[in-house]
Length: 399
Image (cartoon, rainbow, N blue to C red; front, side, top):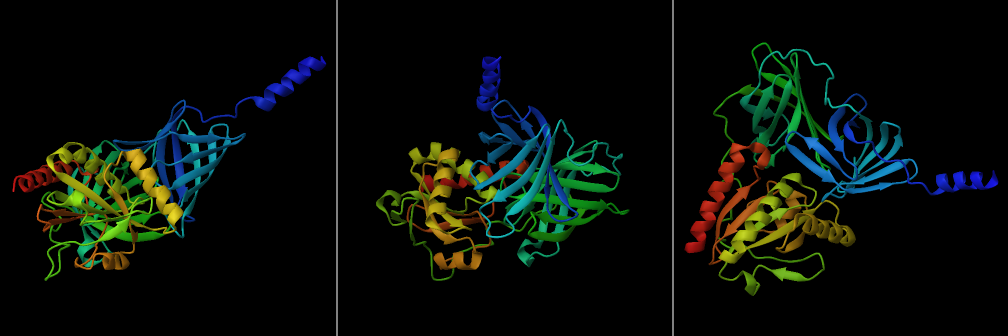
């Protein structure tokens, strides 16, 4: 009897902690007292996927204790810390790339595949197509946007294109006259809501985490376009070249004048490890570099961060390079504050947003500057950008 009791105690003392149950879960991030952002994730045996439309973001860095689970986000410096209770989770999401408003309360339940409404109403109309959108609180050059929607029954996916990038993969629904879209990628938490008006226009609200809110409106316009992405950032009169020298993640300084870049087509991208659009561009550039390095093209990434202590910067850059397979240099250039960042490259008229991508020919002359990045969530716009970009690079290679 005593041996049996000891065996039971031994078993419970050393048995593995409970783990998340497989299946599709529904999570909610609390943005304020009355507003939550829902998203879905699918749990597998040893990892899980965040789900936003067509996108899947895999999380494999998962740690369990007796009644808790800790989920580290890939690339971004953020995590969930949660208590587990049968088929439910409760805890907080921590975004360490933000200095304030960086903790959101979080709850989730298993076997809940819906995102906004378990039983949505019949949709008032089909929103599929291209829309001209207006964000009310933005600066003039960022005020106008293009919304791309695809609707199948109640299910709605899409994105918003802006002069500084897109809002990536949004997913939600149309329920009656109510429009709802959300995306959570481990860094940004986006929530769009709107009401369909009698004239078919949209009026609603946009939330980015708990720190930002503005109103927006939209009307259908299949010819809606953004300002030319190549006209927003430019070299000031009197300049035709870039000049800089910044340290890498190990503290070793590298200059644009380094011999490895001489007589090469050079791409300089202004980026940040906190920036999802920048990660979309990084994935594109990693693939591009694998082919074009042999053709005499080099890349330098200038990293502008929110958190500036050296240990965090080193960790963030190292994590980025490892997880995305970056083989070109990533140099720490300073704060992501746009006015301060502009001082690091005084030959530019401004830094409007991240990423900003500068293309330099073999003579060191700046030939083109792209502001923002239309990523894979934009569909045909992304394909068009890639084709145009590659044509231009191929032209510079043979000059």
